[in-house]
Amino acid sequence: MTLPVSPASQTASAASATGTRPLWTDPARASAFEHWLQGLGAQHSLNQDTLRLASADASFRRYLRIDTASGLSCIIMDAPPALENSRPFVDVAALMAQAGLRVPKVLAWDEAQGFMLLSDLGSHTMMDIIRQQAPAEPGPAPQNGDAVHQLYMEAVDALIRCQLASREGVLPAYDDALLSRELALFPDWYIGRHKGIEVDPSLRDKLDGFFAQIKDSNLNALGGARVFVHRDFMPRNLMAAAPGGADLGVLDFQDAVYGPITYDIASLMRDAFLSWDEEFVLDITVRYWQKARKAGLPVGEDFGEFYRAVEWMGLQRHLKILGIFARLTLRDGKPQYLADTPRFIKYARSTASRYRQLGPLMVLLDEIEGNETRVGYTF
Image (cartoon, rainbow, N blue to C red; front, side):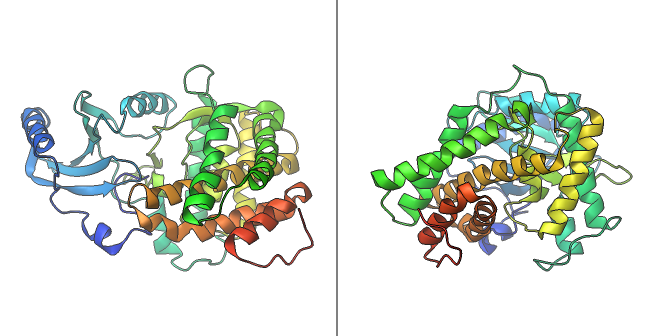
């Protein structure tokens, strides 16, 4: 999910591999890579002796770092074309650069073999800085003017720049079909395969009813306002500003779509790997809404209505990610992501508890987790 560093929740063995020489399980691919790299060496002044792992992510991509003769470094994306399509990365990088965002530059790309040379945005994510400033979680809410609060305001500014560049017909639509496929991950992978609970016709009908409400809200709230949606806009995918610079870098944008304006602010404030108390979530969300409204973005005139739409959009994301994290464990052999599923259960339950029509979903989540519901909702 992120490019140059390992996630905080990764296993120690995976994290310790960062900075080591890359290993290849496929000798033919290793040979193709060496040939490709040698061809680039002179043109980009690459020092092949400095090649080392930078990170892997939740997909089949991995990233390497290599130094140049000038002392700078570059990133190499290794994305086997049979498993990963790198074209969206290239296309969306161009869109975001045009929008004024700091994103990796594509310096060379062998599309047929899935090797790409990129500019390096550094090795310190926004998450790294937050962990340094506020290592305890949950901790006190950051205050206006402190380092963490300022980082979030910089993230808000970057998000608004991206959204202002939006236009229809450029990115895939975040429509009913895609929302439905994403929500289906929750019963299929989290409930059925991870929890081992049979999704029988009765349970399926209940879930379909909740999903219909969630999709209706997400597609029609705020008059159906649509913008470019990053889909993973969170501190692990935002890079610290370059020395002397003011802009956060943006990574992991290859799955961008054209969809609800509420998605990315929900993603930023209800992070997969970091939780804040409601005071701070509200503070940054209202500041985003004020700035977006001033910029002419279609966020509506009523913050209460906007915040409800953000919460319902976040609920869709929480359920989707529970399914994704279960799939990463059971299908892809990446169990470290399951450590963060309680965070998403808490997010989803909290949202469901605030809206009467979602009360039965809260009860269902408690049943799935084996918890007692202390509020008087029933199916």
